[in-house]
Length: 210
Figure 1 (cartoon, rainbow, N blue to C red):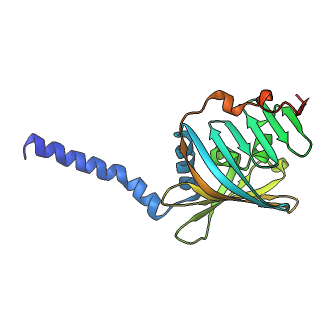
Figure 2 (figure 1 turned 135 degrees about the vertical axis):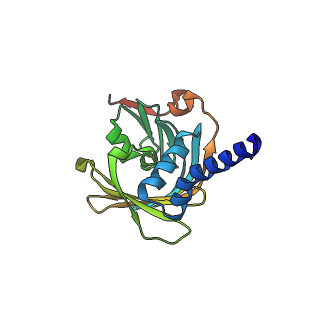
Figure 3 (figure 1 turned 180 degrees about the vertical axis):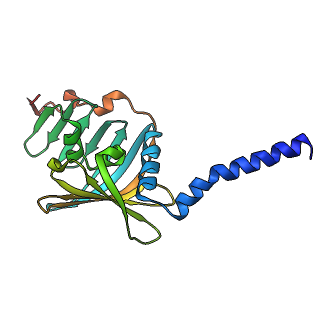
């Protein structure tokens, strides 16, 4: 066997070995393998953009969200939120008011259902639930029992790796269902996207709660 043939053989063997873990995950996914792949997918995207419908006690609410690292901005007809990784601005249309806070990581987790997509594995315990082949369900139970959240359920499309829905179950029995109508990786965003611009909302009263 010449050197060229030998080199090709080694390459084929190396590729076969490298593909074994991914084949195993695809055939027999675990909760953590699905979540790890999702975290990597989000982390490797300059931004993630999604359109969603929230179904809660007040009926269906449509909105959109842009995620980038630990920053996000979310918009619905009733509420708009900007978070730059430290400061959060929450605009309430009904009261024509914008509140400014500096939430903790746990507070961001309770106010932004999409934050669970990038939560560190130490934040929760996870298990894979029974489901149909076209989607996978992963249940995440927060380790911190003071959050007021009983558990999350993330529905994941095993073909694309993107979530198709989220469910947040609170300790008091309330449930929020988030149907993700579309989600995809986006381009890098300007930092200003994640901060409140008072010039665009001159009629709003600003309440600084920091």
